Amino acid sequence: MESVRLRIGTQQRDDRPLPVGVHGIARTGPGRIEVVEGGGDCPLRLCVDRRGVWLNVDTGAPGVHVNGRHVRRMAMLRAGDAIYVDGVELRLVSAQPVQVPPVGEEAGPAEDMPNLRVVLRGVGGRFHGRCFTLERPRLVGRHVDADIRIDDPAFADRHARLELVGEQVVLRDLGSAEGSVVNGEAVRDAWLEAGDQVVFDGHHRFVVEAPRRRPRAPEEAATGAVAEELPAPAQGRASRLPWLLLAAAALALLLAALFLFGQG
View 1 (tube, rainbow, N blue to C red):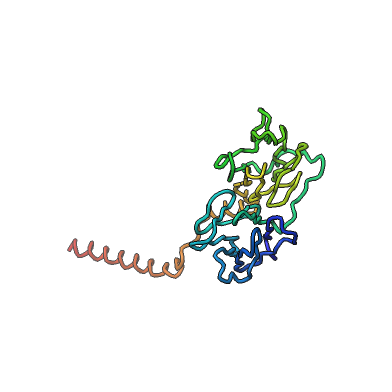
View 2: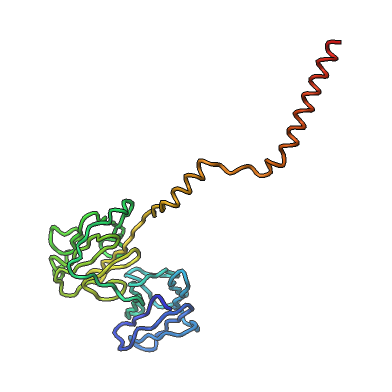
């Protein structure tokens, strides 16, 4: 079962599945891109394995950019990334549909996950390298009060809101004209999990990161406590005990003999 699909610009066709293997990217004409299974002799190749998707670029290949950054040799990709080859956009789209939250879902953070830390990390656009925590709702828009402010005349004052609901992040559209993009798909509302990529205004990219330490179950904690309090017995202790007794007896006899001979 493939994890991502390839969407080729505005060409009218279904998204191309990308199963495990090598997939060559070939230009067949102005603005036309084809996928060659096995890679062939294509200077651009998408290599898919269990770790993810890798873009390999041979020397002399046409200019290739991923999310606006020039790639010369290799790049690791994720769902939602945009690859530009000779002006044609190739977008990696998640094979899993975006989950839409129910209307009115406003529950607070889960009380049994005190170690949960969720952040939005910028990976493209003006906010590249910046992180926004989600201990409170974050407003995305052009308004001066927006937490993630995108100062573009065409961008809505209040584009969307991101907030933590339980263990996930919920993206709520606030009436924007174009919505947002999650893992390559245009959406308005969506559940976001760790690793998901959300894009605003075409190039302001963020990845959800949720590092956490899973609390041990009560059974595990009890087992660990017993293990710490009761060290494991040394191997072979029972078999060495008779020899230790014999050695002690021999030493006692030797000391007694020395004492008697010393008196004589």
